[in-house]
Image 1 (cartoon, rainbow, N blue to C red):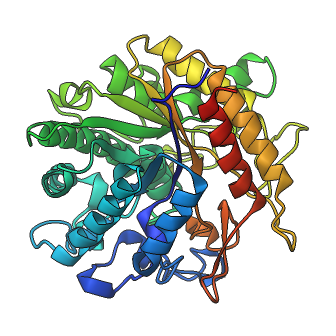
Image 2: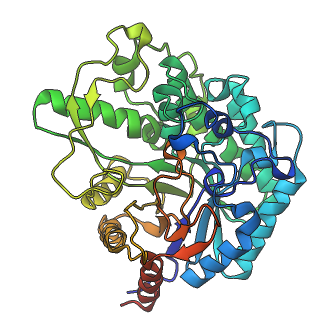
Length: 448
């Protein structure tokens, strides 16, 4: 049976598609800086042009209309709105987002706005970035600013996308901007991201405009490679690092007890202040879940034997032992059942969980000359079915991504788009998966 309230959409993010890195007063973000570090991004790629969505947004809206989606998830570039991350406002940046939103609404497409998708203004990173408590406050001010400007036309607001990646991959592993490899600093960043989320929700709700507020979390279930106690314990540690470090404070009012034993030798947790958990645990109208693959975990020695030099990523696990299953072009295991597990497990752990959207799900496969991407079609169909089988209050599904884009440290090597982008000419060419998704949406709306 069709559900007219269910949202079918696609997702993008500002730094990955907008380009126009120095246009109309935009300031540098940590990803602009990181991309200039030799070896940080594959092939020395940058986001300077990307898919040039900033100049070609009207063409991209036409692609959305033709696709038949009724929702579009995109992010606002903090550096385009506040070039220094605070203070001065760049009106041309705000006007760009208003033009985009109004065009979406004119075409019957609901905007889902993400306020932070990893692109912190470099000026704030220079002052300590997410390691510092002040950044949480600046983020709340920025959220209130954008909400004040667009709250009359936007109803769905997401504070953060995947704070795990910002905190652990960016400040712990060093694979993402700002490229730090830290212990205490990474854990502090995770906490301040959550604090910024809570403060931002409070600030936007105080703004008066009606709206719905949520957060987007990546949820890769950790599966032990054997049933040995050591591997099971390693999977628990991985789950605490990636999922429960964020879900437990958001929906359970406390951090996992395991964090003290896991990280007590690299952090004193002094960044947690009285009252923070109450702010972090603001009631939410929805939660977004991003799922790409499961993590298969084995126990392993610490890579860094000296606790003083360990990063927040070094928790004594090995996630390289992949199962004998099909893999995507990025080498990720294809396990749709992990989507069902991720959704159902989140609901089981937190019975009061708000309604859920699958806010990212997609894959990479090599192209043929005709862009007949049968593997991507099969991947999407299987994962949509797995999401619908989870037994949660599922309100929508967003495919990642509308367009090929700057895929972070991978540069332009991997292509997630339903639409192929020729990075030389910037020509857009829909793949077969684009046409399949359009037909799937139409069929779902008809209830068959």
